[in-house]
Length: 118
Image (cartoon, rainbow, N blue to C red; front, side, top):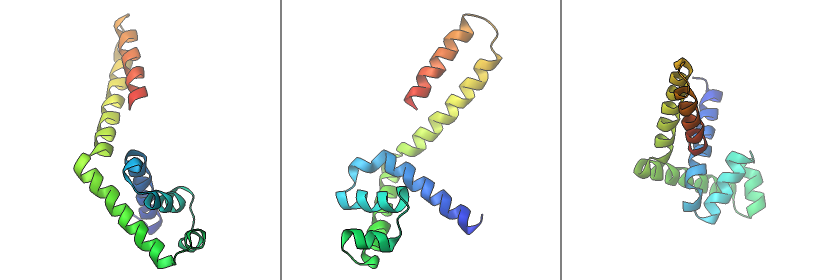
């Protein structure tokens, strides 16, 4: 994997973890992660905005990333979500092969309802 692909994969993972665990973060952790990963601010821009040093921003972001990973290690919400999404994709493929009505329609409705939950 290239360095750019690694950075993109990390950003995607942090954003997903943030979606699951945002309410568990402190206000400062939320703010710094949102600015850095969602809004693509540089460390210097965040430092200027928040009135702290660039190094302090970097350390806060690193600690917040570790907190998110810690929550995922303990709770596994992202992992469970990704597994459920995979199972749902398999179910949708299986529904495509069912030709009998009303079974096909029922299975399709169930898949759609689950899609709204995953």
